[in-house]
Length: 495
Image 1 (cartoon, one colour):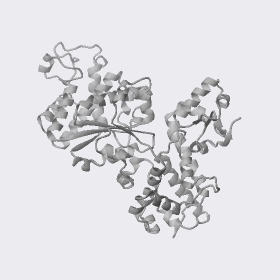
Image 2 (cartoon, helix red, strand yellow):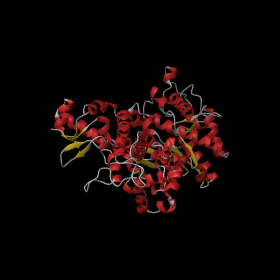
Image 3 (cartoon, helix red, strand yellow):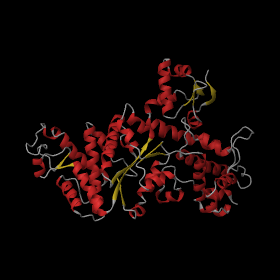
Image 4 (cartoon, one colour):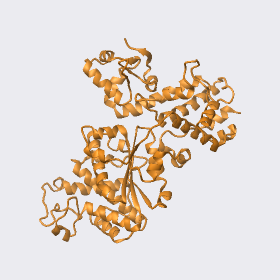
């Protein structure tokens, strides 16, 4: 076996689902979460960053042919790659939740109407919806999702804030719509007189869309992902916008053929409900993504087996291997050493890897695991290139490269997740650089130059984001292995 050549052709794939393109399905196992989602039993998918939410979204959005056979029309409402469609709203944000509720509903109607056009739905209700949108200059023959959203937002501003364009609010005495507003869509129930003038309410249009789908025998699923970056520059706007989204989601529960499928980080959900959100108890069709030792082993093996050269060289029966956890573990230890650190009380290699890619909440995400495995390949190739010894037997990796693979994973996780999303905490984390890995509130107060209460508050915020693990029995805060290399930390307790 030419191990160097094999490693040159070995990959564990991309750690970000959007970059995996059309090969993601080859790794994917149809878990119960996937079955609930694809069968329509789940609407909301929660999980930590890097846990696989976007993988589920991507698989769902690219599975339209199979779902269309089940009379499901998929309607992506966000860009899988590139700039978030909501980014431009931050320059001129909605003023309150009512505007955002109106925006979500109107945007969804524009997207649904476009899908009606795509599939040739020309029933009475489809034509009524199209006419209302056209009269409001909300549809064009072509247009990006950003364009659709911006046109909807322009209409919303004219409706809710006509003074921004006119200087003074003037309402038509008959329709009660702002004078000068082009279009006939209202966000409140129009009066009888207004209805005779052709004014139609937004909820009536949603009902109309639902009736068209019912008549055609189809349902529409509105797909929403990447909400963690949609409003990343304004946390309060994010909170209000996503509260509005979930209120709209609950409003649309009345329409049996229109469903929103929302993929959201659980820490963002916690921010939404912080301070109370009564509607949360009504959001019941949800799942939370979690990973355990067996499922992470399965992920590693599936990605190994995607390499045809590996399967051929090792003579693996793919189907039999994937049918048994024991066979997967057996294959794992044909490739990897039994232990990274040798000794009777030392962990197995798999457990060592999982402990090094786990955050302070004891959560392992596929993103860091995949990153580590690819770095492991790169480090072993470097060993070969400088004349390092060859791994024994069938193993592809020597023990020494495992620790060498950690620093890059650590730096990326710290800078691209923790600092990118919690920049206000960066000075306190950086103050721990080259310090010990376990701290008390008192030692943290000294390092940060703050009193005990402030130190406790800051430490608990770092627990919340997974940088610290809170160890109640020892009454200290422990930095997981995942962040140590990036900060050059020293094993041990601070005095």
